[in-house]
Amino acid sequence: MDVATAAGHALRAQGVEHVFGVVGSGNFHVTNALVAAGARFVPAAHEGGAASMADGYARVSGQLAVLSVHQGPGVTNALTGLTEAAKSRTPMVVLAPEATNPRSNFFVDLPGLAAAIGAEFRRLSVDRVTEDVTAACHLATSGAGRTVILALPLDVQAMTVIRASLKSLEQHEGRPDHEGREHGRLVDALDAARRPVFIAGRGARKARDEIAALADRCGALLAVSAAAKGLFAGHPWYLDVSGGFATPLCAELVAGADLVVAWGSTLNMWTTRHGRLIPPSAVVAQVDLEPAALGVHRPVDIGVPGDAAVIARACGAELDRRGPARAGWRGPELRERIAAEGRWRDVSYVDEGGDGRIDPRTLTIALDDLLPAERTVVVDSGNFMGYPSMFLSVPDAAGFCFTQAFQSIGLGLASALGAAVARPDRLTVAALGDGGFLMSVAELTTAVRLGVPLLVVVYDDAAYGAEVHHFGPHGHPLDTVTFPDADLAAVARGFGCAAVTVRDPGDLPAVREWLAGPRERPLVVDAKVASRRGSWWLEEAFRGH
Image 1 (cartoon, rainbow, N blue to C red):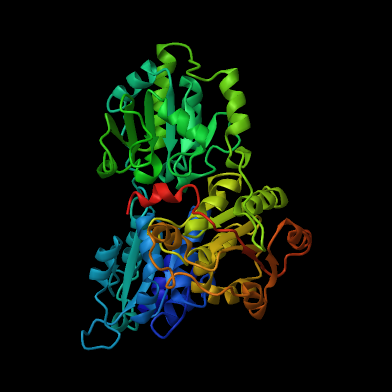
Image 2 (cartoon, one colour):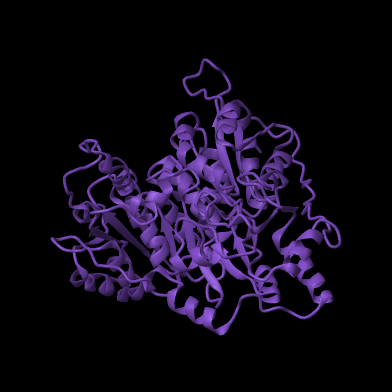
């Protein structure tokens, strides 16, 4: 057996079910070996799309994703999507064929590339194929997750395996026993707090029940970073997203906390409104699996390294020994306020639609009412992104995919395709700006080919809206960031999608009809949105520039 074939079989033995990519000569054999071993290959139109598809698949499924690309340009074409994945700590193995001769036109410094984007790097060797593949998969899935570039030297791929060892790496969870030690100060702070707020991030997505139980034990309110939206969906004390996206009520309550505990969240500038949201008088604690993440964005009074679920259970057990549960600031009046004001759609606004443009809030609230509850919402980057993020509800954390770690536009459509592959039982909603849509439009071919239930909503302001609202108020010319209106629905039909143009609520019945039908083709909604002013979170976001 040659090395490429052995590597494909070794990946399948690690439980790999899907591989995303674009096949060329350098990854032809390893990809075919994976398929022959039982994995499904999902072809993309572009390697950048394939990288984002793998990223979205891993985020929604919680499983290891594999990306397969050609040597040289195949790798560099995928680079933006890989950077997003690496910064998001997505568990992914990238099969990267490697031309090792620096004189080759395909030569790329793969170790340097991996280091530049924050990914891990490993190289396959002829005498350790199974061990090298197993090590890469283990590294990708251990701890908080990693994106691993696994180099497949072209000359090595064709060699005969010297020894095909079936030895696997021992899986260590690396969860120390914190009971009675590191978590002691956190327990004391929880015991003393009267107005605690928990903010859970991406690192706490597997600890939902443990954190909620601890919150119930000490009367804490529950909030999340944007990346963990939906984690506590349905909980009566859930405030939704903290930070720039926060509702007025969420911001008010976080600002009134005497203890803020971050679970798997680094409390970055977006989650804390550049630190202003958390009051100076509050005790701030942070629990994170990665010790290096403690205090990385702001000083914390208590830093606890460890798994969020383990720490939450240990804290709850100790509080149980100390006495009865506390209500904190949970009471009937506050519960009623959260029920009435806890969602952006419940906050009053003046509709700014008209002249052939629909208010993005009106559009998104109407879609929220039309769409089935079982949905996956995937949001691209741009001025528009607060509307689908905060006006569309999701059933759980797996129902929300937020491609913002690198803040690149154009990743949302392909990420949504990966999410749809991961959860075909749910309707996937890709929320894009017109700029990001046009950057990634080639993947509509992939959407039609896959036949997945996909609704693409384009918030179309005929501009790069963030730049318009960033520089326009200062009198700068905007010719470079504004464009003639385009018929994006016609573009989508050209790819084989169903499509509709929405200028006011009266155009939305076409969406209802598609939802009621077989959904055999993706539907693209070209929503011509009003854009007289920037979205509510944009001014806050620009404070970080």
